[in-house]
Length: 313
Ligand code: NAP
Image (cartoon, rainbow, N blue to C red):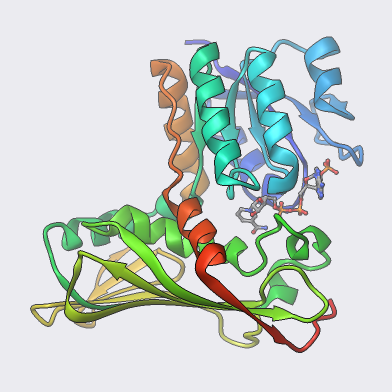
């Protein structure tokens, strides 16, 4: 089969770190162009200043990967669908839940493939945790996602603006694991949104969840914090009602059961994402998963904003 001719839109950190290398490694894809408002160049392919120029005057393409911040994504996805190409979306998919539903309807109406990616779901240890939670009841589940914003998002002003998601930008990765592995859905019961007085979006958040997966008196919580220097923590601790202790660490790459490592695979999230996209394109099926996004929206709906000290980059 001929490779899927793909263009990458938005050549920032994630496009360079993950998308372009994964596309280059997968012979089911051929990079055909990039779209970059700032004129970023990638060897061997043309750069277009905007997507309209690509569709009007560029090489023939079958698909685009949209790697911009979410605030720019809705219009770009609709434009791509109208241009007759399939679409892979970085996370978080759109600024609002309503826009995602609208894009899914539009893709369906136009016969295009739409794929909402949640990169943290694409780890073998996450699959293994899901298998171990199937049919189980939990006495406790605690998400701890604490990292240094200055280290991972240097100078990214958009992340602090409305629709930039603040600490939910990484936090949604943990929530995407939660929605993938739980045997029953989780719902936001309450939330605290700790927000620098000079910013629109939170720097830390605490969430309490309700879920039918919990035993009577059980607790499910998430703690997200962007103020952690030194060691970084991306962990989900799940204690089963039968006493088994499951620990998913390293952002979803390692699973231990009662202290013994049962899965520890290197991170190949984006290679698996592109493998899945190739399958979706071949079968003409979309994959639109709003569940992690709905939890974030609900946290903002029921969450209490609390001002904390101003943040300067
Ligand atoms: P970034 O480094 O700021 O890059 C985003 C790029 O998108 C910019 O360089 C720019 O590229 C383009 N762009 C288009 N409209 C923009 C706008 N209004 N504001 C800013 N940039 C705009 O961000 P990133 O870290 O790559 O994140 C992009 C998306 O990937 C986010 O949704 C993020 O959640 C997700 N993501 C990031 C990481 C990570 O480790 N950084 C990991 C997983 C997922 P051009 O100048 O080329 O147009």
